[in-house]
Image (cartoon, rainbow, N blue to C red; front, side, top):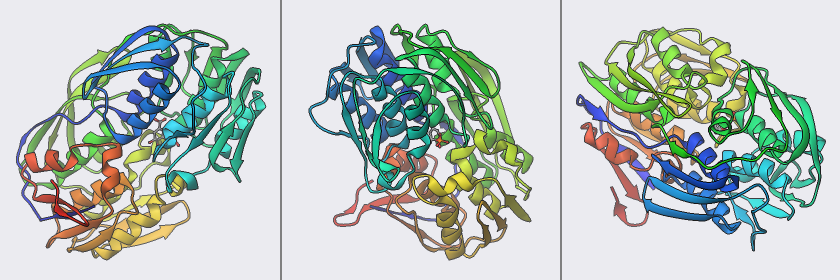
Length: 439
Ligand code: S3P
């Protein structure tokens, strides 16, 4: 699949983007081991979350889908999962693989987790180490998938200082902790998204958290709950930037999650001059939600504060585009983690921006992006959903059409992305490389 995007004038409007990916994964996984019914609305029917859903079904969780974004599940309770008949395929999803590794470390059966070519290259030692310290046995291919997780291990509590700021690692430890004796303490080098902690509380688990320390008594059981998933700020961010880069536009994004552990992108864009306001702030369960109102604004380059990195970790591809379209230069540092995401996001973004005429100086853990004029041409996404969508936004302001290669992975996080941009007047088409236009 590839996209061709024409330079376009964005229209003002009101948009609802799909549900939050991180929260959808957690609602499914925790609902699967809870006692009783979990009723999810606003679920993200993206490929990553569907991989999580299929894995839970393969372990005996009864799940119905009365609609695309509705899930009703009867949880199995703490000891109710059963051995899957084959490997569990996590697709492209690092979140699914790392969270399931924690959950499965505490089961009575062994399991095997596999993934696609991109996931098979991603580091898993970061979860294998703490889970092994808790008593799990996990075999890997030199620290990468596939993972073979042995059953019938008894797990104990842990006090663990994370070497990298990672919500996935924190969550893997907490999930294993639900099956462990003793207390679980996780200390983070920087605050990361806390959706697991909030969802655990929603389902009746005792857990205390400060800014960078989480304490949970081990061996607790969960109770099913009604969960309303907010729209995903990481998806909304593409529309936010497209609006900022347009001329005289106002776009409202409805019901978007604004958990403070995720809103780094708003703070960074505001520092670059963006006019973004949060209206009608409310709660969906434990998660804060708002309507985000954005006005087109000229952006200026800044030095991005590394303290904000973990609060905007998925938005850096997009922030590179903001930097490319800003007046002056923008310096990113402390973003080395981007090199082990769905692609090496620093290298892939730098190469794509250069192909479109922007000057980028790459460093081992960052980049300096010099604001300029985006030409047209062809860019590679590296099969990375967020990079494909970032360049689609850049292309709205390019000198001539931009072709973006390898865009199929957009369906992992933002099904309907092309239609959403089209609804705002953007000339974007998706092509199947064999057949022709498909959306
Ligand atoms: C996620 C955590 C982040 C983020 C990913 C989703 C999660 O990864 O990049 O898209 O749902 O826990 P890390 O934990 O590796 O930072």
